[in-house]
Image (cartoon, one colour):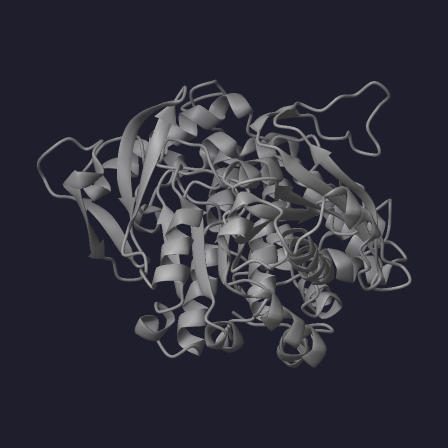
Length: 538
């Protein structure tokens, strides 16, 4: 994977200096990582302090705005700042009592990073779990905080320094782009550990990151820039090569929205999906509505070509070409080089995210309009898949792109990285994560060496972070804890699929490049009847 000029040196400098992670801060981090007493496990104990007294805690360039004990029960998050009058959020159910701390950090004169730290009032497990964001962030991930506290973690989340749902915050505010790119997560992490130590009288024994999509990118950025922040990182469907990912989104938009004749009605997505399954579902020996390994699938949508005029059960020539472009992914028209991988067969039911129209997906549209070109009148039809790619890479210089494969400092710090991605992802092409993993393997001395601290698990049939017909439910934190705390690397992960809350299938997820193969006997909905076997890269 080619990195923008200057990225590697810049990223290495930030990793070793930690963005301002100097000797004093490292010393403080060591002091926070101490053994837990039985008293601490009961809650705020001797040597700690009360929740409300945290309001007076002094932290570098940070102001605590709220320190409040929250009783057990349902918690209703505050509405976004831009929510309409009268809007209320959906309550988070059955949360144990916790200490809620809200704070604002200003590491630069133009930074306003809001974050919250939630601390179990009792039965703290002695660990810290930070949770990531989605899209452009812009608000605290309250659902993630609630889930972490329910499992007895101290936890934190940030809005990454702004409160809007797109990239407009970056116009004229380069410091805020730094906050979004990497600084807000690191600041939140450092301050959260200090708050945890003040409340319990000791810092967390283990620190974990849990994020998918933008949260996956944030996790990789932490491993690359701040390798001592977390002992274990779960990074799902990472939007790591963020600039090139936006070109992939625009490629689909231009293929389907630029010419009305090329538009594929969402009503035809099931038709295309069924044809892809017909061509490729059984390649793994099990016909189950899941394309286990889309890289082996060579499906041509031309099999659906209309015999006459357009009809609901066929594709016109222009629609066939549009579907082929989706499956091929963005390429440089001058060099023919692949800019980013395509969406895979099996993702068709979710194509509406990028191809549903009438305009391109806002997350990509906003990047080009607000961040790259800073032009509110920018028209996606004018995008150049040659010169504009170079411009995007040179402008980013590693601020948002988290693609540095040199994870040496993270490995030396004892960190463990659990990467995962759904093969049926309709928002972030999964081969982007596979390609990054190959880059890490090549940089870190081969697959065996890399596997000691970083492993990738591809999930057949899973959509973006979750959903789809595949086994999308698995215990990421449990797997990481076994690896970090007990040295048990995951040889496989048992995952499940649920329908209306009821488990109806289990499968093993295998460390890439292995895949799950049915033994040839026993039910295909039972993980016990599958074994992980090695699959060579196509």
